[in-house]
Length: 125
Image (cartoon, rainbow, N blue to C red):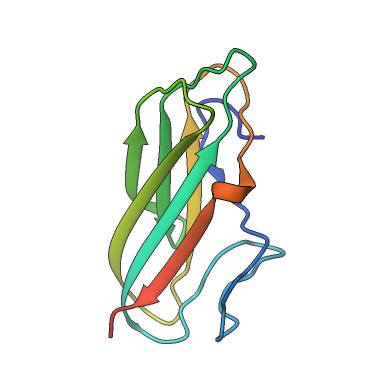
């Protein structure tokens, strides 16, 4: 559950592809690049509505080394669920780390819909 009006780290626990073993999916849920470079970072975060089917504004955020670098705001919706996506291109050193956070302003806790929540990182070369 994501508490109201608080940035909460998204804990991606399942990996589809991580050839370098650079994502920790069990303790701190952060990704560290294997090498320095410019990276394209993308996440899609989906929250479920309250019992009445309503949403409040939702913010997805990318954190680098514990500080927010970029955020994307999604307005309220009355759909079955609300997806918010965010992208960024960052210069990263091999010792940097990336985390994804989500925040909503609705008044009560919201659950993440795990089937539609993902994060991806690509080296741009």
